[in-house]
Length: 261
Picture 1 (cartoon, rainbow, N blue to C red):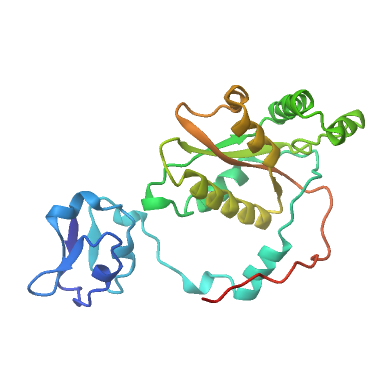
Picture 2: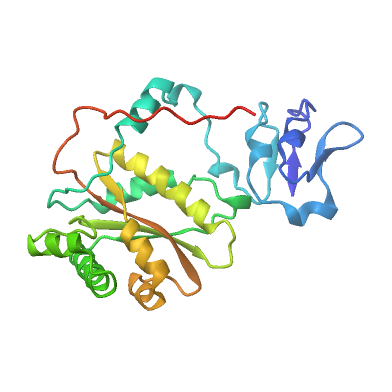
């Protein structure tokens, strides 16, 4: 499973210390090797290869060409990352302008690095790129609420020609996962949060589609309308598009509630 270059290896034990399932140990000479009785537990996280400062380790399940050189100098500063988080807004008014598929591909190329439990990487992204389909789904959502909840705010918005469900967003980004995965909801939320922040850097605005999630979870029949893969559960969705208006100031927030224990 592991290939060690003995000429490069310094036998420092870094790879041993970071293995999350304790598969790696050092042999009598101090070189790292995989325990045969635990090889099946490997989650292919790549930590062992990533932490070696001497480029001495290879993992047979992870092609070497798939590894990138970590560029610490390319990381955002604490202030720039803080600005990105603070300037993130829930956008509810969108321009009538489609987002090119290349932008979705660029965002997903980074968002796929969001962590998943045991590195299983089981999430499926569904991009509703057809604006007409998104509008049709918004109409069905509104009909469901009018029939089940009779919300006066929804009725008023519809009478005024507004979309109170998906806010007129031209696109929808949805994440689903196999139903049997116990951490699916958490992993899906983390992935969508990463997508949301990345979307901001591309000049896009998003808003969490909470009403859609509510209906999908409350009504199994309606859930069939969002094109979930067989055996999958809905983890969340984002409305997405170009914001119609820009934010020029950052509203205040409450101080963090913190307990040190």
